[in-house]
Amino acid sequence: MTLPTHMDDILKLAEETGAALAPLAAGVDAGLTDGQETYRILRDAGLLGLLLPREAGGAGLGYGGYSRVLAVLGAHNGAAALGFNMHNVVMGALADAAATPLPPAADRFRSWMNDEVVRGRKLFASATSETGRGAKLRGVRTSYTLSEDRETYVITGEKSFVSLARIADYYVVAARAEGTEGSSEVSHFVVAADDPGITFGTVHSMSAMNGTSTATMTLDHVPVPRSRLYLGVEGMSLFKLVREPHWMIAGYTGAYLGIAEAVYRCTADYVAASDARAGSPVLQQDLGRMSARLRAARALVHEAGDLVDAERGSMEANAMVHAAKYIVGEVGPELAHDALRICGSAAVSRSQPLERLIREVSFSSVMPAKPHECLEYLGKAAVGVNLYDARAFAW
Image (cartoon, rainbow, N blue to C red):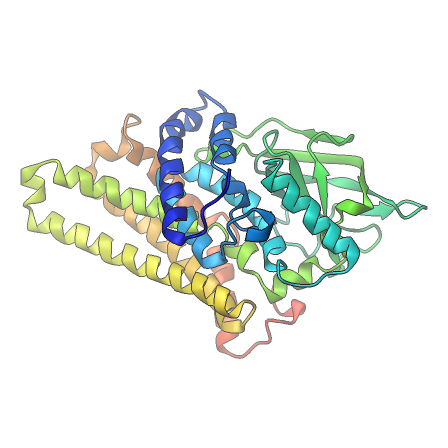
C-alpha cells in the first residue's frame, strides 16, 4: 500500500484506521481477545512505514506530524497507539538518519530495515527496560560478546515490560559489551522473534493497556549476525539519546494526548445528551475548564513536535519535549478527575468506554520520561547545566 504524503491525507488515513481499531479496545482490555487483530489492521493500513523516507516507500513524516497521527489513533484505541509507538521509537532513530550519508555497513542496515518494514510489513519493538533500572540505558545489565571471527554477537540478559511480546517480528535490544558494567557505551541489536535463545514470559494482566501485549523477554546466548547491529555502530546509543532524546522520552506523548482528548469527548457527549445538563452553567464551566486545559496541552505538544523537526537536538527542542510530556501527564489525570465528578456512575460503569479511558490516561506517568525526570531536566536546563554531557542527567 502506498502511503499518502500530504498531512491532511495522512490524518484522514489515521482517522479511518483509528475507527477500525476502536471496536477492538474493550475486548482486548477485558482479556477476551489478544492484540493480534489490532496490529494486523495497522500493518494493512501501511502505517508501519509512516516515518521512513518517501524514496524508501514511506511517508517521510517528521516527529511533529507523527505526534498528531499518534493522538488521532490514541483517541480511538490508546493501547494500540502505545504499541504502534513502540514500533516507531525504533523507526525514529533510523528516520532521523534518512538524509545522512552513512558508512557502507550502516547504509546496508538502513536499506534492509526499510525494506523489511515497507515491503515485508514487519513490525518492530523496543526491548530496553530491565527490572530495577526501567528504561535507563546507563547501567543496563544485558550484555554481549563478539565471536572470534567477529561476525556474530552473542547476547545474554533479561528485559522486563517488553511491549508487543509474541506480536512483533523483530525486537531492538539494548546491551553493553560484557565486562563494561556502568559504561556509557551501550549498543542496540535487532533480534528476530524466532532467533534461538529468545523466550517470553506470560503476558502481564494489567489494570490498563493490556493491548500492548507486555511480557518479560529472556535472551539466552542469542546469536545475532553483525549485520543486525543497529546502524552498524557499537557504543553510540546513549550518546544519541543524550543529544536527541525526543523518541525515547516523549514518543508516547501523542498517544496520551489522544486518550485525554477521548476523555474530554466522552464527558462532553454525556453532558450534551441531556438538555438539563447541557443547559447548566456549572457544567458548561466545567467543560470549559477541561477544554482550556486540553487545548493548552495540545498546543504544547504540537509546538514541541514542530520545534524538533526544525531544530532537532537543540537544547530548546529537548526542553520542549520534556515539558510536553510532563504537561500531558498532568492534564490527562486532571481531565479524568473532572470526568468522574461530572459523569458519576457513567464514568465507572464497565459498559462505558469512559471507565477504561480513565484507567488508561493515568499510565502516562509510568512511561519515560517520568514526571520528576521531566521536571529535573527542565530545571537543569533553566540553570544552565550542560545537558549534552551524559553525566549531567540520569539517562
